[in-house]
Amino acid sequence: MSQRLTLALDAMGGDQAPGMVIDGAELARIRFPAVDFLIFGDEARIRPLLDRHKALAERTTLHHTDEVVKNEDKPSVALRAGRNSSMRLAIEAVKEGKAAGVVSAGNTGALMAMAKLALRMLPGIDRPAIASFFPTERGESCMLDLGANVECDAENLVQFAIMGDMFARAVLGIPKPTIGLLNVGTEEMKGHDEVRKAGIILREGKVPVEFYGFVEGDDITAGTVDVVVTDGFTGNVALKTAEGTARLYTNFIRASFKSSLLAKLGYLLSRGALRKVRDRTDPRRYNGAVFLGLNGIAVKSHGSTDSLGFANAIGVANDMAVHGFIDRVKGELAELAAVNIKGALA
Image 1 (spheres, rainbow, N blue to C red):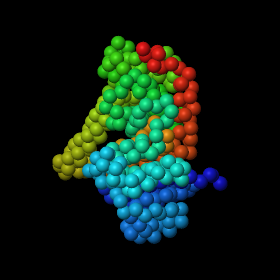
Image 2: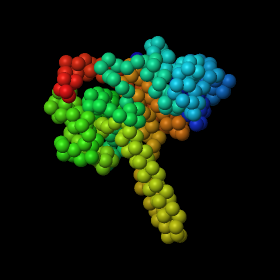
Image 3: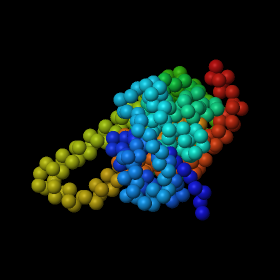
Image 4: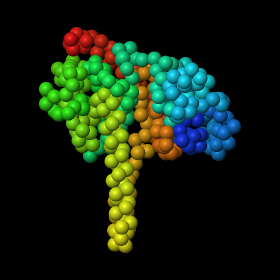
């Protein structure tokens, strides 16, 4: 029998919580039979939901708290006033070794601040980075940072490359992922100083990753590389632009098929193909952003997702724990410590 794994869930985070969280945990229970759950939240609301899923209830320990971090709460306020919130208690379970990872669909800023305070940073990592994966023409790729750090120096970008490499191996199952630095061109002389300096370190093979080189914006969806590395400002803009473009084309297609009787007939004939496109680009399939660089696994689910999306976020946490992500990153960072990156960048 596989070794059992425990994950902590913030049941009160998300637009449709706690129902979405419990239903998502039920889907995850079926997909991952070796996973148990610590669920934190309002027992009066959660217990009736658990009672509908007897098998899930048997694998769940429910911890009551009526304190919740609200979506509009500032991170500083959440840190001071949310010490007994469902989010904070779920994170503390990871800190205390009671759970292998935490999953929450709550306030992103608060989750980052609380997780950074409780779990601390990995040795050798200066800043955490938000990473997630998305569909491309070649399959799936991951990208970081998606918003945790507006400005990054060259050393931060090199650290992101290492963490992105390990994330792609653990979550996407790519044995030797290729790494690309997002830039305004592929030529070595282009881009900001920090991007060019990071490129020098990665290009010279001083870091144990497969560096492809500089990539541009259209390389992201083309799947030119398996891991796209950038600062949080650029990454967040790129992510939101891609999401907006996907919604735009969805609306265009929907409006086109409603434009005439002949168009409606065309929709009936093409439903199968359109269903495949919908499934391939379904954002729920790619739900689950990870705060990389923390000394513990913390996964952020989209706040507006449903049970299927939340189950996929649980799947990301499970994959990272099963593959020993934290220990593997520590090992890579220990090797990196022998390389004097600061000296090389001077």
